Amino acid sequence: MSAPRQTRDGAVKPLVQPPDPPLGDEIEDPDALETGMPAGETLRIEIGPDLAGQRLDKALATAAPTLSRARLQALMAEGQVSLAIPGKTPVPLISGSAKAVAGTYAVNIPPPTAAEPLPENIPLSVLYEDAYLIVIDKPAGMAAHPAPGCETGTLVNALLFHCGDSLSGIGGVARPGIVHRLDKETSGVMVAAKTDAAHQGLSALFAEHDIDRMYLALTRGAPSPAVGTIQTLLGRSPGDRKKMAVLKSGGREATTHYRVEKTFGGGGKHAPLAARVACRLETGRTHQIRVHMASKGSPCLGDPVYGAGAPAAPVKAAITEIGFARQALHAAVLGFVHPITGQTLRFETPLPPDMAALEAALEAL
Image (cartoon, rainbow, N blue to C red; front, top):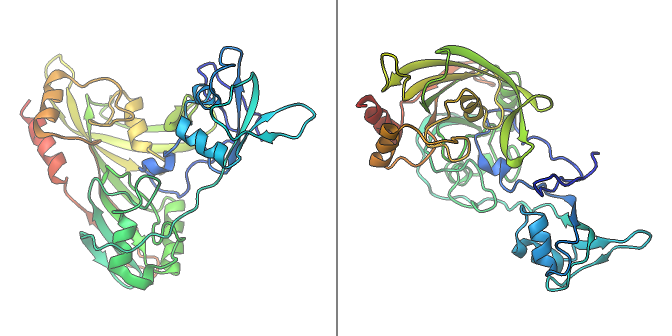
């Protein structure tokens, strides 16, 4: 267990570092990093003399910006906040309006209660289905499964309606049938299990990296060289727990093979303004492609998290003109051996209309 500490920028380190999000595949899913704070953990927040005398809820929120005043007030009302006094039993602090005193405060973050998702009649683009599994082309804007702030309208809600009782309980109550995930704003091919045997078999394939996965990204500029392999350690960013980052130590090995298929703009002595890049995953870590492309200086266009820096003016104008409003990433290919029948399956989908429109606009540069 690591000792809690507060960084120079005021961030609070949890007593127990949360593990990487579960599941073995490319977890392009912000709900895996939803709050940036661990659940079911105890945080220690240091209040210094500069904050002493302020309202307690305000002082704690200032010292721990990842917790809002409203959240702290709710935790206080539940008796989850106390001041550590040496030699004495901590007494819960229930009033946010009380004056803060300098010292170490303990804040308990109780684990969330997982709600059982309900079936919803949401249309699905089904690429393949049998008694054991279902393959769909997930649209951008649909989360894989319910999470805080996104309890309805997810793929799980749609699958529960489409598959009926056969999906119940497969893979857990909160994520029935889900073997891997795509980020809410990433489109493309996903497979879900309909039986326990299929779930176990698919999970094993993903864990062993015995899956053919190819993503298409439209990037700012073009990674160099045009063909290569990115192999790094990937883990939560030490400066922002809501993000993933390339690490010098710790984290998990992540390998992406990429190829620049096409470039846009530039020419001659000028570097490309944008590119279409095919990325094949050897491993599948949280936000792997987005972080790896950003690490090459060519983040996915429209990426709100890893796309630091504005694209060239003509590219920015193209994005604005067509109203493109997500990271330009599409899971184009998914291939695997059926875990029950042994049949070799491979599914490929074209770019969805919004990414196709963006590519057409880029080709006109």
